[in-house]
Image (tube, rainbow, N blue to C red; front, side, top):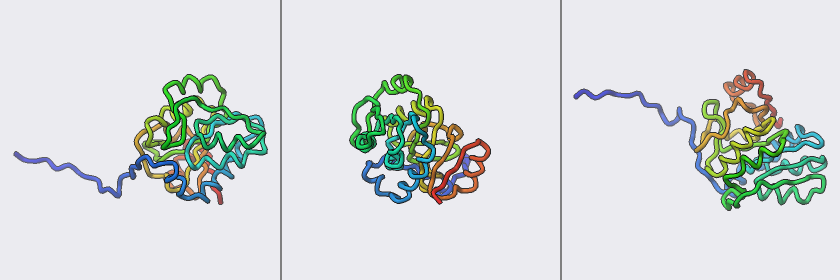
Length: 208
């Protein structure tokens, strides 16, 4: 019998799929860039805002740069909760759930219903990878539930991501890229991503 040949794609043509790493492993990558990303993202926070801060390592330093503003923070991150507790201007609401020691976050099946009770003006989100086709992805099935719920409930969504996250994908998509209102990153986006953002009205902010 004649065999049919199918075209194959080289591995270099495919987005790199990323596994779930521990918080410590992720936190050691691009620490200076992540700090400056948070400094820039803090410009978006206004007095009396109710914001959500994601568990990703890129988001952690945001707390320090909004400490002089009076606002309410919702989070499922143990580290963000502990950091915010030292700033009296910040009101903190912890999302209920069981502590995942690998991600240092609280996760659970009732999070979506819980989050619907709050009017979240702005959500600052992280991701394991992001592409125009697969959207914002992460490697934890438990984290996916929370991230997806936030993407569906927040009035606006801001992605905090260093340059290494673009063109990569992970296990699960929690939001399409076009749902973003802004991207805060450390370098100019690749041309195709920049064009995509212009077409969909996504504001791009860099640390330069």
